[in-house]
Image (spheres, rainbow, N blue to C red):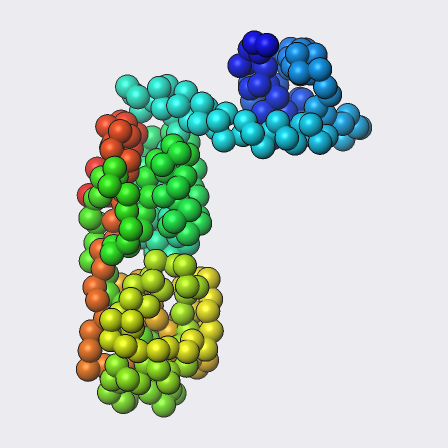
Length: 292
């Protein structure tokens, strides 16, 4: 059985949108044309794929099975089509940017704004999940450029662009009993630490530091957002692990105080990484030029 790829494309958009009308709009074809494609695909496969109702369509069991199998492939094809469309000019196209919430809020947003003003016809899509997941998506071609911290495990087929040196520090508020003490490595075991979750790149670096110095830590809180960690520390709930460059304003305004330690946490690099075979894409290269 040979089924036209365009039929699967129509199926993908209908399943994604749960609407034949919306699928027709995205595909820029008529609604009857999409309906005909779905009927043809169902005939070829000898099964129905959707439940029809007044609100649109939903996948039935067979449709769910098919959608789960072809979804990633269709997204790769659509991404490839966009890459070809945007290869030679900046008049249209898409860039998929991946970064954690902190990097997005504290570093990237002004650059995205400037890039959008320079190239208003380029569609910017932002992915905000953990670095490991972003790298997986980048290897599949679903994310063009990933922002993260080094040291980190970056696949060998990625180009790394260093952007900025960063420094982890421990912070408290003005009333903390730790504010005027000199903190040693051993003290880390007893501090009421407020940290990012275990799988966050910033947390991994801190864990590695503690492991290398035989320190066992007992975090008071694990919070998935750096801004909330800062707020918790400034409200006296514990000792926050933050990036100094990201909280400099709060340090200058005495909202937070850097703990005096007799050791230094390892500095790290803020980087962006791009798969080698995508580094010559004109949209990606122009975005990196803007950063540098």
